[in-house]
Image (cartoon, rainbow, N blue to C red; front, side, top):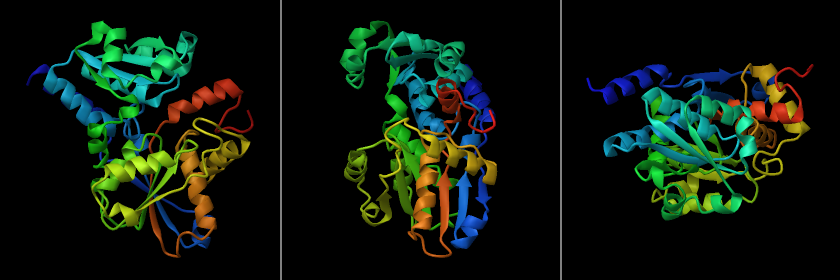
Length: 317
């Protein structure tokens, strides 16, 4: 067995796959006749959690097949994607580089500090420069030393990332009427969309003015069945990406107290808030079965807690 095969075998042992499914029970759900299940991708790995390994899986394979020297990718100062890449590359013995949007003063925050501890080399570029991150030649000119690194788009948003996410629904029997997912780049939503059978896919964008995401997804898909099976809900972004307020914080705490499951404030808390509002509004008929996807990202909560001086899952603090 060569080093690459040995590393991959070790990495897979670290992951809890397939991810388990929990049924959520409460008087609220019973009152509306809803059967709600949660696919616990947040438990796949403590750091490479949620949809992160799904999007990395085939990109890592490509890196190894191409004999790239390492992985170069992009993210903000509290990026779940950056920290997941740093950990996966550490486990595989691969060099990793993170191109970070914004100022270097953020390198001391919990996310970026851990990226550094995991061996990721960080480089900070201006927001204006960051807008050109998808231009390969521009990045090559900025960082010529990484010319033999695999360039992975922010959030793992490429065709191989989508391919990994097509496997989410294939790990269990198809017993559900609806599948729900939070969305940032729509990489995960596109992967799930490609693997739909009879289920309807409900997408909850975590950012405002996100209609372009739906347009992008519909234009990208040759699967015409999505026209009838896809629905976006735009009203639950709480002011924009990574924006929160007291109402969202309180909902996240109540959800944890009721179901003993932690949500992240950027994605899954907003998704569940929107899902529960749609249940109240009568969107779902009685006896509907719903599979929600927990896309991980819990490490990002610490940044909010540090910035706003609160303890998310202990309201007495």
